Image (cartoon, rainbow, N blue to C red; front, side, top):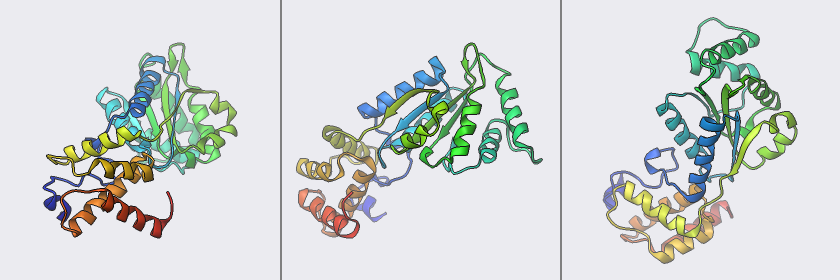
Amino acid sequence: MLIEEYFNLKKHPFLNTVDLEFLFWSEKFREGYARLLYSILESRTGLSLILGEIGCGKTMLCHALKKDMENKGKKTSLIENPFLTPYQLLFEITKTFFGEKKRRRSKVRLYQEIEEELLKNPDEAKHVILIDEAQLLPQRTMQELRLLLNMETSEGKLLQIVLFGQTDLKKKLEKQKALKQRIGIAYNLSPLKESETDEYIKHRLKVAGADKNLFTSNAIKKLYKFTKGIPRLINIICANSLFAAFSMNKKKIDEKIVDIVVKDYKENLGEW
């Protein structure tokens, strides 16, 4: 609370949490989101893929899509810990779509329950599965996704699946040719541009209640040079810069403060 009070903010602007109030629509974020909506709601291709470096905003995109799908009346299963067996995957899906049942069922029965539910409204794409950190999916579980995507009608796939993963997910998909061939769209969520980094910082400060920009233009340039536009790292450097300014009794973050924070980061953790 010290930082918020010192800078007269209603909340901390640079916490690395999934808070959709801070959602920033960069050019790449907006494009990726639009492609997902088209794939899920219009073409109903079944499988979509969002790739990106660590900290580029894949999880934020995932949660924004979940909220939007639910607002549109879709049943949405968000799987944040994908290190699941095929059975555990099917169980998580049925629990979200149909509610938890006490009796234990076989994998075959779980699969049947999913298909029966989907066929109740075959003309509507009502069920969406979002899998974050998809690069952690075991190979056997990825094969289960392929079987789920076999559920379809002449209008399209009955189940829409979106994989959000780091770039090494591509290597895993090379071993799953049958699944890879089912990908309707694949999009890479790249870091922010320098101008977007400036806008991103101002946006988060405004949402947090700031009535003015707390970072000088030179501080932004220095910050971008180190973070290369990666949102998670921007948040880390900005949060520590606010604390450094507070400890130095300053109300404005200049490049000298950012230099101190970056130097400390490098000494303790090395290069990003």
